[in-house]
Image (cartoon, rainbow, N blue to C red; front, top):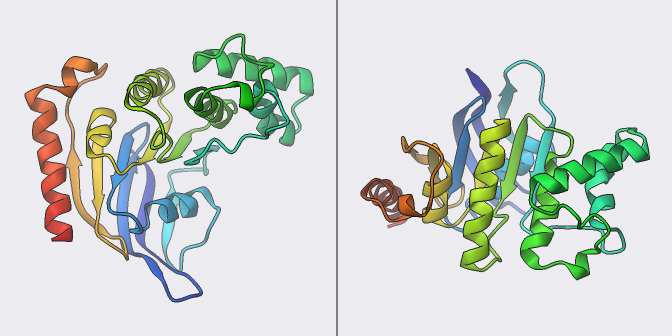
Length: 245
C-alpha cells in the first residue's frame, strides 16, 4: 500500500529558478527509498515540500490516510549549542506539550537507540561530528514518526563513521519500519541502504529511473563488495550518466 504519492510536482522560485519539474513517484508504506541526482536537481526541495516546509508551484502530495508525524534530518545537525543532547532531543516533545520529565525520559531512550546512552548531559561542542548527527537522528525519531526524511545527513562525515551510521540507521528502520526518503549524492550509499533508488535529472528535477534493489536485510560489509551490489550500482550510474550526458 502506498504511504505517499507525488503527482507532477514542480517548484519554481521567485527568482525564476525551476528546481523541480514534473516529479511523480509513489512510495510504499515502510519503504526505504533514496533520491540521487546532481547538485541543484531539486532533491532537497522535494523533501522540504513533503515535510510541509515549502509549497509546490504545481502538482499534489497525497498521503494514504492521515498525514503521519514526520521526522526530518538536515544536512547539518542544527542542534542548539547551549542545550544538552538530552534537551535537544526532548525539544520536539516539549513543543507538543509533553511534560518535561516525560520528554526527558523519551529522549534518553531515543539517544540510547542511536548508541548515545550516557551522553544526555553532553553539549554539542563536546561531541564528535558523528555523535552530533546521532543526536539529530534521535531528535527526529523521538516522537516515533511514521515517515523519516533525511537530506544528505552523512555527507560531511569520514567513510568509517558514515558506514557505521548507515548500519545503525538500517537497524533502526528494520526495528521501527518508518517510511524513509533519503537524499544522497553517493550512488554506493544509496544502493547499500535502499530498496529503491530514484534517479533525478538535472534541474528542473524529474524522475529518469526508478531502480529496485532486491537484496535482503540485514546488509553488511560483504554486501558492499558483492556482485549483486555492483550490479545495482552500475544500473544507477548508467541512469545518471544517460540523464546527464
